[in-house]
Length: 266
Ligand code: KIV
Ligand code: NA
View 1 (cartoon, rainbow, N blue to C red):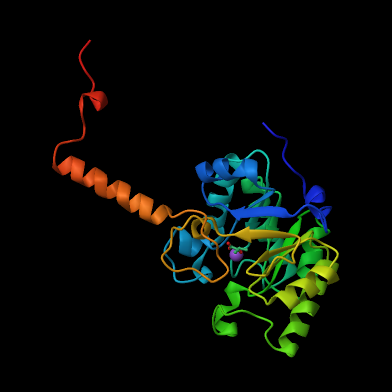
View 2 (cartoon, rainbow, N blue to C red):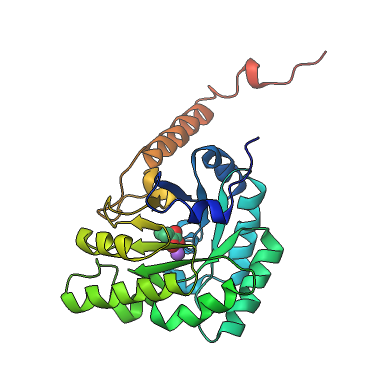
C-alpha cells in the first residue's frame, strides 16, 4: 500500500497541487476514499450524517473517538484529522489538550481540527507546541450556529470580512498547519488564502483556496437537500432506495432467493 502522507507534507502544499479532502466516518468508506484523497476528516458533521442529530452541538468526544479509530483503521495513505466536538476544548488550552491527547492516543489520527478565530489562537499554539497538529476552521463555524443565527454564508459585510481575515491570520500565526474556510464569498476566500502562510482548504469557499473538502454523504447524493456549494457526484439515495424496493418485491414474490443463493446438500 501507499505510504501515509505526513502533516509537514500537507503544510508544504501551500500554493501547490490542490489538497483533496473528504469526510469519512466508517472504516469501509475510509478504505474506498483513501487512495484518492490527501486528507480524511472525521467531521463532527457525523452528528447529523450518522446519528440524525439536529446539529453538531450534541456530538461527544466518545463518538468522535469511536469513528476516528475506525477511519484510521480503514486508511493507509491519507492524513486523518478528527474534529474536536463542541464543549471539549473551548474552556481552556488545558481542557483542549486533555481532549486532543485522548483523540490522538485512542485513534492514532495525525491531528485535530477545532473551530474558532482569535479566541482560539492561544489554544492552537498550546496544542501545537505540545505535539498535536491542528487544523483551524473559520468563516461559517457550525458549532456557533446559535450565535451566528443560521448556516448562511459569512463575510457579506466589510466588517465581517475584516473579522474573518483577522481570525484566519490569528489561527495560522498560532501554528495551525492548515485552515478550513467554510461558507464565504469568493473575494474573502481569496483574501484569506493569499494572507495566511498555511494551506487553506475550502468548503463553499470558491476555487481560490489551496484545496477542497466536502461532506461525503452530501457529494454522494445521500440527502434530499444540501447547501448550494455541494456538487453531487452520485445519487446514492435513489440507488439505495431502488435496491431496497427491488429486494422487497423479490422477497414478497418469492423471486429471491433462487437456487444460486441456496445451500445444497453435498
Ligand atoms: O464536520 C465537518 O464535516 C466539517 C467539514 C464540513 C469541514 O467540519
Ligand atoms: Na466540523
